[in-house]
Image (cartoon, rainbow, N blue to C red; front, side, top):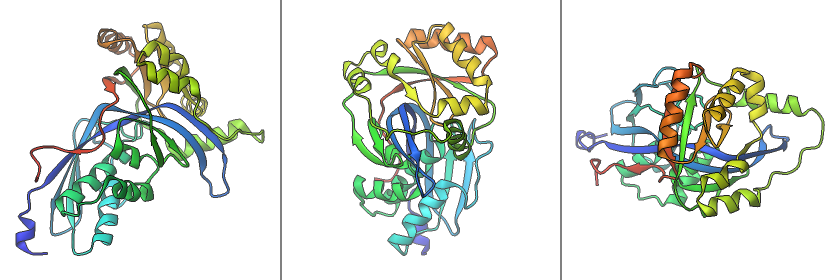
Length: 310
């Protein structure tokens, strides 16, 4: 790599978290995965990922939720950059700086978000000019949630979650997220789901028309009864204290509460911004949660910030 190439300005990409409005899990497949039908919504909790040309591969994680994020080859963002570099040829290495504000191992796809942001940033830094479809193809090779974080908005995911179709959703929904101490392992939660289900028949997952109809109204009160997560029982089995968080949130006025993805973050849907403020204050005062975050959705997926290279 030439010194001139190292002078290229770094690229910063902002990327949102996600919540699963509906997460339906099919039977265990022979390959160890499950078919999913999920409705993703991107929400306004963001990580920022800066990618800069460097003499060697590296990663730094900063910010309020940086603890516990690997900075070696296990980091999904590093894997994303190396995967794109190996195909593009003659580019890389890069140093990746992640400003972490999405909960770690919290069921909100924080690692997947960073990988999505890294793909978008490296594409811009290296001048590859990949289409969104191309970027989503790379994303799907790395993980099930990553293509959605490139797209953002509201979408149905099928297969392992990586096959996307847009969803018509009107309006803006307000959320309060209750953060828990420590994370939950996604494989462990799926394994617990299989254990709880036993040997009984499990239907193939399909999106429910009731949820689709509720999203078209743009009304939180219409959406609230149709939030569903098949992983919730397993998350509660592994982390029983989450049941108290759900009860408290509903008691304090949330329209609905649901474990986000594989947990342990709990997502509460509220009627408006004021209700979100009230719920956040009440949950914080109750002492049953480590921290709370307010957000809205849907929002756009990974996007280059205007201070980055054009």
